[in-house]
Amino acid sequence: MTTSRLFSGMQPSASSLHLGNYAGAMRQWVTMQSSYDAYFCVVDLHAITVPQDPAKLANQTLRTAAQFLACGVSATQSTLFIQSHVSAHSELSWILNTIAGFGELSRMTQFKNKASKNGAADATVGLFTYPILQAADILLYDSDVVPVGEDQRQHLELARDIAERFNQRFGETFVLPRAKILEREAKIYDLQQPELKMSKSANSSKGVLWLLDEPDVISKKIGSAVTDSENVIRFDELHKPGVSNLLTIGSIATGMSIASLEDQLAGAGYGKLKALVQDALIEHLKHIREKTNALMNDPAELDRLLSEGSRKARDCASVTLSRVRSAVGFLASSSSLQDS
Image (cartoon, rainbow, N blue to C red; front, side, top):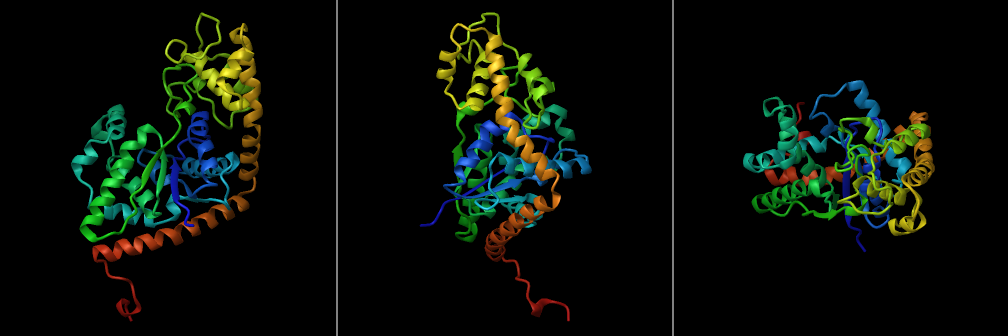
């Protein structure tokens, strides 16, 4: 029986993934890899749509891959690779650029949001065409399923539209991917601004829990997390966002349901809640931090794992790219066409 293909990726835009990445995507990737032929990618080509320090980007790319592995992505069960190691991503992206419309890209909400921060005049063409590269990422691997958050649904729909347009114009070439929306209840919010999603671009690092934070840092951040004046432990995202966020984090760290935590902490104050979350999260993230550091201290092994994954990804991508090149009328390279 053929196993459905799954593709997903994450940018190396910080030296550590944060708890929102882990809860919202990574844990579900680890579960899904046993049910799909999974391809997981560190999307460094996407990272350079905004200015990057080259040395820092290289280090962050390795650290992100190491964290994938430390969180439970299996280098044998899944295909883990670096996007820039597979040149087919760039080539297919260019071809799809000639299929996509300027108008449909102009309607992409994420481009509007990102461009508005520094002004549209300073936004790069790469940032504008980011969804086309994302479509290439997905379509290269004949992906049946793409796990995405709600904020990425629009990009996945664009990838489907481009694939359908290509197929209609050139014949059946691409598999049409479908979205698997990641579980809503896994969303983690900023500790200092619990009405906002936890993000690497937060105004203050005090509200962000990084997977590689040391225990004392985790304790300090949880200890200073915003709650409310009621001092009643109850899950209510609308009226008690800070307390609800701590209960969600506690549930992830302990494996207990939020309802069970509410029962256990009934009558206790916020100090007890924060102490429980601190201790549980420190213990939960200990293995991830230690395994990441071990991999970073063994660059030969990390390089071996990523090289093998990139080889597998290139082999798969080359099959799709060959179909695309033939469909659009590109000449195949052969000895008869080479200079003598």
